Amino acid sequence: MSYLAVKALHLIFVICWFAGLFYIGRIFIYYKEAESKSENEKIILQNQFLVMAKRLMYIILWPSVLLTSIFGWIMVFRNPALLDLDWMKVKLVLVSLLLLYVIICQFLLNQMNNGKIITSEFKLRLFSEAATLFLISIVFIATLKNNISLLINFPFLFINYFNLLIPNPNYLRSYHQRYSLLRFLQKSF
Image (cartoon, rainbow, N blue to C red; front, side, top):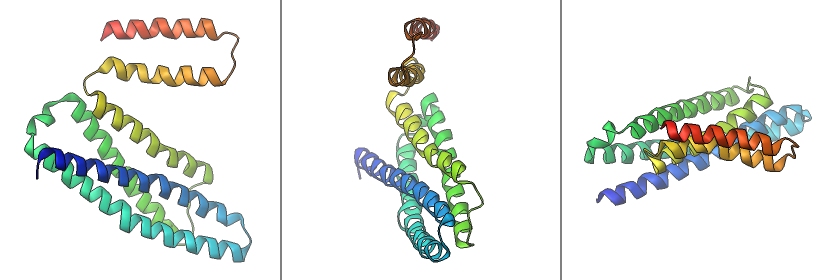
């Protein structure tokens, strides 16, 4: 199998992995929300969410994690010079943290199996959004590779996006300050 075919399979299973992460986070939240329902509704909903979460974890998430890892390591074995690149080291650290995230998802599923998720609904919502941050970080690092200046600009894109949504009378002054800082950071790298 060619290197590009392995890379394509790696990307396909990465997409499946993240689809599973986005969905399981919502299932955890729905399960927790069902605790506030009447007893009959609670039992029906939580049983259904437990079945959905088990299927998602064991049929989609863990196989995607395994196949993504296998195809990723095949690419590394075929091109060991990748391990010498700084961006790849950062990506592997993020992927290791993402594996930890999946393990935490498994712990939450085990809590569901025992009848109650201990974590609050608010914390589950924050936890669910972490998958999006992992996706953004990993995609930007894998795409931009050693273009550090573009990675530094990324937070400023978010700041400017939120400034467009929230009217601010000091916007022009604060924009000028951020732009000056951005220019300084670009010159530094």
